[in-house]
Each structure stands twice: as C-alpha cells, then as structure tokens.
Image (cartoon, rainbow, N blue to C red; front, side, top):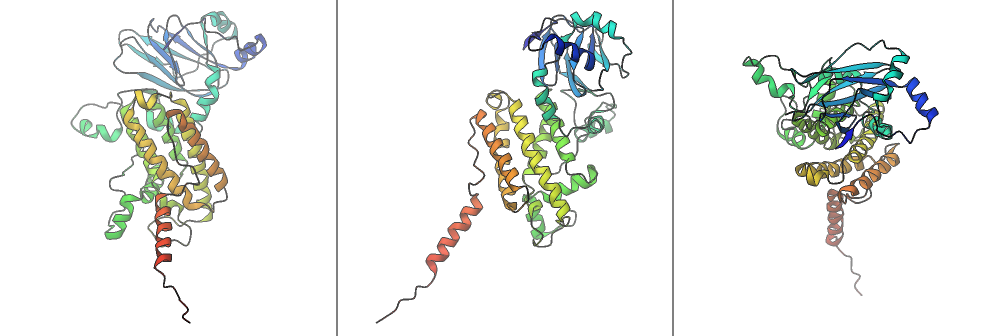
Length: 386
C-alpha cells in the first residue's frame, strides 16, 4: 500500500483539464485522520501522511475506506455525490471512528482553491473500472442493505446471522440487510418426491422466490446485490458479504430451468413468456460483463494468496453457468452471450484458469452423443443372402 499525500501526481492532466475538473468535479474533505491511517476510495487504498481531502471526484456512488492505524476492523462509508458537491468526514480520536456529515457543505470556490494544495486527486485512471463494477448498484439498494448513514465495516454481520444475539438482548447492533438466499432447501413448501429432487439440484424456484418476495419482482436487482456483496467482501474483507456473494453466484449459475423453452413440462415456475425470456437474456448478458469486471479488479495472485478456497467456487459455478446458458442457443442475443462468455474466459487466464470454450460440449451433451453411438451399434443389420 503506497503513501497518500497531496503530492500525488496529476501529470496526466493538462492545466486546462485540471481546471475543468476542479470547476465541475466534487470534493470530499477529511478532518483529523491521523498519519499512518488507511484511506481509500473505490478500491484504491493508501497510507495517510498528510491529507485534507480529495478533489476531482466524479459524481455518483463511492466507497470511502478510513481506518486508523492498528484498527481491528476496516471501516468505510458509502457516499453519493452530486456534481460540484462537497461532503466532509471527521475523525474522532476518542472513539477512533469517522463520521460523515450528512449535509453537503456550502463552501465557496475561493475556499476550495485555498485548500487545493492540501487535496489529493481522485485516481481518475480507475474511474471507468469503478463505474463498471457498480453499474447496477443504486443508492436505494445501498441504503436498504447498509443503512441510511452509509457506514459499514468488515465485522458487520448479515441480519439473519445476528438474530439470535438480538433476541438475547445483545442490543440493536447495526446489521447488513442482505437478501436471503436459501440454497439447502430450495423448493416450495409442500413439495414432495420428484419436485424436491429436481429443485434440490436446480435453483430456479429459489431464484424466483428471492426475486418476487425480496426484490420487487425485478431479476436485474440480483446484480445490484451481487455487486454490493463483492465490494464489501473484497475491499472490506467482510465474511458475511463473502458468503452472500457465493450464494448469489450459485443461485444464478444453477437456475437452469429458467432457460426452459415454452414447450417444457409444467413446473411451479412463472410462465416463460417472451417478455420474461427477454428479461432473463438481459440479466445473464449483464451478469457475464459484471463477472468479467470483478475478476479484472482482482490481482492475478488473489486466489493463490488471499482466498484459495474461493477459486473452486468460481470455477464450479462458472461451468454451471456455461452449461445453463447453452440450453438457450435460440435466444435472440445468443451471439452476444457467447461473446460475453469468451471474454470472461479470456479474463480467467489471468489466474491460470482454462475455462471451457463456449462451443465445448457439456458432460451431458457428450453422454447423449455416446448413447446415440451405442444405439447405432445396437441396431439390427439387414444382410442380403444369395
């Protein structure tokens, strides 16, 4: 982690560009953060030497990390900046915590110019990547999951995990209100026999249960929760968010009956109408782009050094995803989905992965081919006798 001070270079900007950004960009002012603290924004982190804030911050959603030296947990705030808006963070040494002033500061341009020498520039070279990683994440979703104040840390638990403590009078500790994904019992109440067997493997019923009951019937909202849990798990190292990310990835990758054509047997699932199939196409095309962006954000040695166990989760679910998507080669955007997979496959090479190509037959397809060959061999042969 490099040092952060106001001498960070902006040599890639001309004077005119810097002036334009100063006039149109937003600002984040930081008061009292001690030397040696970790400070970061949007996945880029530094050790503080001297700092009074950031300039050239693009409008929109940002994640500010601020942890004093030797802190047991990483702490952060989600903020939402309007153009030319200024927000402030203040460090309290007595509680070793940072508070966000919820109201934008009414500060003159002249005063900001006076502070300019003490403001570090936003890392604009990473702005495009941050935008891609949060393409579906809305202010509404963040506030619902994290809370109105946007404050979050690496030890914050998911609401379901802390229910027992709360019932025993542990106090109203803040929790992450993540969507609840039930993968172990992924069938409807009252299901028996073959239906239980089917939906214990396929997660399509659980998919619609989450979407309809928790996400307002909007499948694309799953991507917002996937993006949020990724940020919290990879930037803040929050264990609850990591488990939630894995659950969502599994849910999306193993819901193969979502791709059933209209002629499929009747199942306790929404009818596969053309409108719903169009929504699912858009969802899974966006999912491929999101996963590619997330993998690009990770260091090439991430799985080997930081989380070796998660590599198996990614590899398993990516293959499950490929198998499911290949069931709907008749989709109008099938070629775009194929291209999205091939891009994801290329990104995976950064980690030494050899993902199967889009056209590689699945294990089930190979078994079907073997059965056809066996059937051909077993057919009677007509021999003409003289």
